[in-house]
Amino acid sequence: MKKKQTLVTGASGFVGSYLLPALESQGESQIHCFQGDIRDRKTVLKNLEEVKPDTVVHLAAQAFVPIAIENPWETEEINVGGTLNLLESLHRLRRPCKILYISSADVYGKQDLALLPLKESFLPNPVNPYAGSKLAAESYCRQYAQYSSFLSVVIARPFNHIGIGQRKEFVIPNFCSQIIEAKHSGKSSISVGDLEPTRDFSHVEDIISGYLTLIEKGESGEIYNICSGEERSIRYMVEELVKFSGKNIQFVVDAERVRASETSKVYGDNSKLKSLGWRNKHSLSETLEQIYNHLESEFLKSKHTD
Image 1 (cartoon, rainbow, N blue to C red):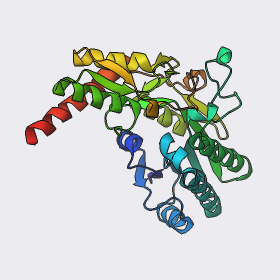
Image 2 (cartoon, rainbow, N blue to C red; image 1 turned 60 degrees about the vertical axis):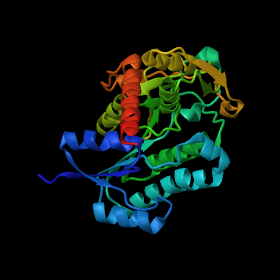
Image 3 (tube, one colour; image 1 turned 45 degrees about the horizontal axis):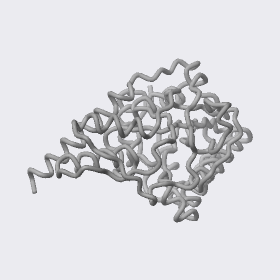
């Protein structure tokens, strides 16, 4: 039997490094990585004509909020324009294709805290250009899900995901790097932003498991949260990381690290995804310890080679 063809955009990023092996281990599809700039229509069409995908996982995005605030135009071109390029090009191929669009829980923005956890039915209220761009792309996905007879489009809204390999500018690896540096240099403090907001953190492998579930069972036009369903403050996270260091490290608030539009509480309802059989497997404390130990090991290796 001929293998199905799966195309992954944005495969070179943090999430892609976990998604590709997970897809390959299933052995059901031949996996292809999108080559080139998602903003270029000719490039998109060339990829699609070569692969003729049965499934597309659309990860490609400008996903770092500070960059989105600094350069909303480029963020819109990649996140919205790139998604539209993909959807319209797939529609014009006139072949059946299932698309998993990776949106973000950031689209919820500021909500009535009394109504938490966040459900897929809540009206989005994005508070930054990144979130706005993801919501705009979602609207195109739902549009094509309704009117294209060829496309099945499922939307995933992952909440915060962490794991080994995430870039240092993201919150957990950033805290780890500062703590490790402080521990081994004798510093007594690290720089932090507002530690009181709460977030819903998951191991990236649990997020990937959600993506695989949605590829198999997600319904076209539907939105699914992927989250732990538990809230933890940023303070809890950094205090856990400090415990792993075995040192007494103080936190110094750096005004530049405090976002004016920060949402104070975020955690999601994962019951819709659970109804498809998905379950999260990793505890938060174990995940944090895994990341910390890996980064400390890398730090010590780099010191030995200097």
